[in-house]
Length: 353
Image (cartoon, rainbow, N blue to C red; front, side, top):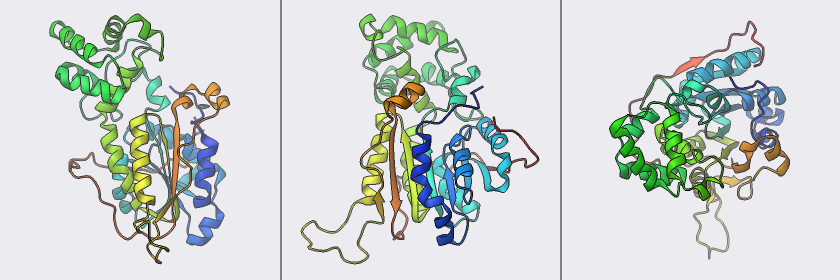
């Protein structure tokens, strides 16, 4: 199990970015406790820091992983009704906010990628350091596994997944080897896959860029959990539920994720007034403004203490005027959803993990 002392990437900076939307001044302006939606609750590290450092704020924690919800609920139980956990995917943020009777929220946080807890539990199959079942589902109760992807996708589809999500230079070679190998024995655990990757990736390439399985495992995880499609839906939904003065903060660890965030934030902060107009008519200003200039990165000290921080890209926006209406969302969202479950913490106790 992940260490309770694990510190999320850029924790202090994230809380500092959220603070103006969640502090006492914000509460006074709103006339109520400002609400943060932590869309990637995990073990609750970000939520715990917000609840401790911003005592007037409430947190709604979303996670598709029931195990994460249970552990975070124990960790945050001491905060009583200031914390609410919800079993959902984060593109359902609009429905979650409506179900809780909230008209709008003051903050939204995304810390994308896989959590330390998921990496540390062998049976989840996210890590390649030891032989384990090839699962990789963030919600292990539903959907295809990584083994299903390896055993059923065509060579062309495997190549696409490895190339697009893992940025793997040898995607075609690996995909062909996977198809050949599964004809004699289907993939069930990570060990044979790691062996295959060592055999197919040339030795010079294995000596650079980290473990040779890193890119393939990342790609499989993103495919199994449909991460980019969920994020593409979630970003405009998060902006829609944001009240004036509220902020959306996103930590990305993959270039495709960061590109989606940049595009969504650029669209939300772009002026629709022609460049040659000498003034901006009242009411035509962008509804949001960029809080960070470009993407912020971790410094050398943080990367040394937490190697996961090496690839982080942090962006934030703030709503400065009311929305004119819901943002356009991509079509094709599945109507089939796992029923949401709201988790109230046990206020009788439970030490932080």
